[in-house]
Amino acid sequence: MTTHVTPPPSAQRRRRVSEDLVAAIHGREAGYPLPSRFYTSAEVFDLDMEAVFGRHWFFAACEAQVPEAGDYLTVDVGPYSVIVLRDDDEQLAAFHNVCRHRGAKILNETAGSVGNIVCGYHYWTYGTDGRLLHAPGAAPDFDSSCFSLKRVHLRCVGGLVFLSLAHPMEGPPADFDETIGRIAPYLEPHDLAHAKVAAQVDIVEDGNWKLVMENNRECYHCEGHPELSSTFFLTYGLKDEEVPARLRPAHDRYVMAQTELELICDRAGLPHALIEDLEEPETGLRIMREPLDGAGESFSIDGTTVCARPLAELPSPRLGRCSLHAQPNAWAHTMADHSVTFAVFPINVEKTLVRTTWLVHADAVEGQDYDVDALTHVWRETNAQDSVFVARAQIGVASPSYEPGPYMPSEYQVDQFVGWYARRLTQYLERETAS
Ligand code: FES
Ligand SMILES: [Fe+2]
Image (cartoon, rainbow, N blue to C red; front, side, top):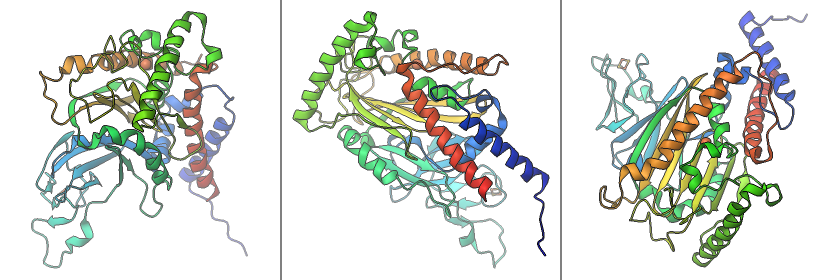
C-alpha cells in the first residue's frame, strides 16, 4: 500500500510560488527587463537572499579596510551579518555575526578593532579564530569547543575580499579559482592588498538591489553624469557601427587612446584585453583595461591624476581604468593613482546600501599627495545622480502600468546581468521543486 503524505500548506504555497516564478522567468522576452514583482515583492527578495547572496560569491570589502591584526568590518546583506576580520596570524577570516549563545548580533559597528570578539549581551568571548574562549558562569561540563563562531567562506584576489554564505555541506560555487586566475593578473600590479583606504562612503538607495546593479551595467544614461562623462567615454557599450554621429568625435578619441593604452601595457607586460563572461558562469565577471578621456590618468574633471603618489611602480600614469564587473554586486575602477570599488548590499526589497571605497598608496599623505574632496568628487556626484535614477526606476516598476521595454544595444550588460540572475534563480528553484 502506498502512503501519500500531503505537504503542509506552507510548503505547498512555496512550491506554487516557485513554479510561478520559474514560469515568469521563462516568460521573459529576450532583451527585455524582468516583471515588476522581481523588484517589488518581499517574497522574491527573500528568495534572492537564499538563491543568490545565500550561496554565490559576492564582493564584500577591500583587504585595506582591515590592515592590522584585530581589525574588523561588518557586512550586512538582507538578513545576514558577517564579520570580516584579520586574525592574530594576520590572515583574513569571516564569521557569521551571530552569537552561539542566544543569537545576538555580536559586533554592531561597521568597522573597528578588537582583541577578542565579545558579545555584549552575556559576554561570551571568542578568539579572532572564532573559538569560544569564555562563557561566564558555564557549568563545569560545558564543552566550549562545540560553540565556535560559524565560518563564512572567504577568498581574496588582488586585494579584494569575496564571501560566500553557502552552507558548509553544499559549498560555494567551485569556479572561484578560475575567477582568481582571470582577475589577478589585471589587479595585482596595482598592489591593492597593501593600499590604504583614503575614503569610504555608504549611501542607501531607494531601490531594489537589482535596479542598482542594472543601472550600473550601462552608460546609456551617462549624459546624466556631467562629472563622470568628462573622462568616461559615452560610447561605452556600443560597437563601432552603433556609434551615433554626435558621439563620433568621442569615439575617435577613444580609439586613439585605446591604441596608446595597449602599447603602454604591452611594453610593460600588463594585461589589457577584454574578458567578458557575465552570464553563464556561477561567478560572472568582466574585466578590461580601458582608456579615460582627457589626460587619461584618473577620475577628475580633466582626467589628470588625483593622487600624486601612484598605487605601485607602474609604467605610466596614463593607464586609464582597469574596470571590473563582478556578479552579483560589484564594480571597481583601478587607475595608476587610485582605485575605487563599489559593493552593493541589499537591505530589503526596496532599499540597498552602496558602499564606495577609495584606495591610495599606503604611504600617500592626505593634504600633500591627495585631497579627499578632489579624490572622491567625481564618484560622489555620480553616485548621487545614480541614486536618483534608481529611486525613479523603483517607483516606476511598482506602478500597475509598468510594462518592460526593450534594452538598447549599449545596454547589453544589463541583459546579461538579468540573464545571470535568471539562471541562478531558475537553477535554485528547479532544484527545490524537484526535491
Ligand atoms: S547572546 Fe551572546 S552572550 Fe548571550
Ligand atoms: Fe550611472
